[in-house]
Length: 203
Image (cartoon, rainbow, N blue to C red; front, top):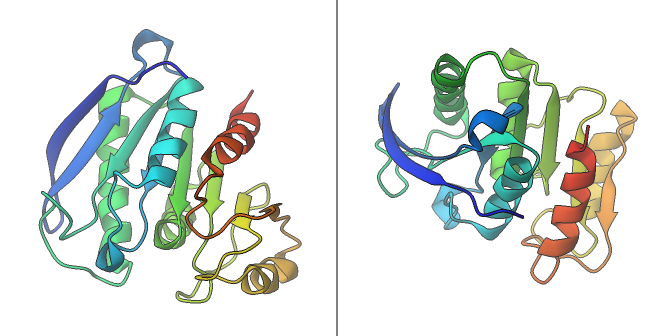
């Protein structure tokens, strides 16, 4: 993957400043991808390795890749809001980035708690692509997601058991891509994760 040109900035949001990192491929841009990190009360930040992997994948496919620190994380103002305020924040970021970069095809991606938030955001924005990695279906009320959503989960996830994800996906007839031997944080499996996401993004 080519190295991203990252811009770190503070964006005024509904509850104060939001810290964002924007990786812009420039004139070759072909989409806008918003990537959400795991639970902020358990160490989740936009620097999370899975989140960075997702951002690099979308950037390599020509998307403007945007990561945001949730409320109360690093330079972002506010406090944790159980996914409600976090959803509002991402909708705000989406509008700001669309105003800056124009009407590009939108992709949403999230890891764990971030997957829950992006599934909520998708109900308003109807993205062209939705990628959920290790969605925290056992901790938050994950609702139905659009057909065609890419769900990736580790076989050995001990934070969100695979059976819980399958129970959530089954009534939707939603396929789940299971990565053998992977835990919740995909340690040692990030290259394989990138291959899966790159393949799904190829147009």
